[in-house]
Length: 83
Image 1 (cartoon, rainbow, N blue to C red):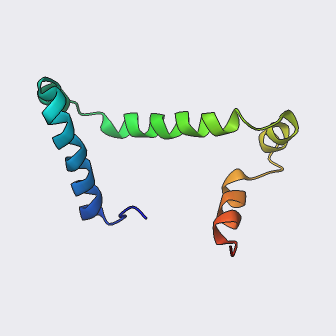
Image 2: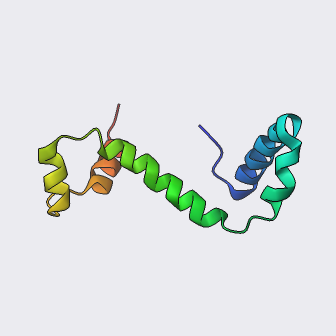
């Protein structure tokens, strides 16, 4: 399981950028001045969710669009299921 504490996540992020520094150090200064990381992260979450939605059949998509199915609730139920 991946760490979920903010300090652990910050270290994990720095570890990623250390690897990038070894390969593409020239990119880091520009990235250090970029100030819209939150928007990019939200867009990436949306892109990943879109990839999942693309796999659903038309009936499920219609039920979600009509408000008859709640994917977030279904996900929580699956997480809570005993193995």
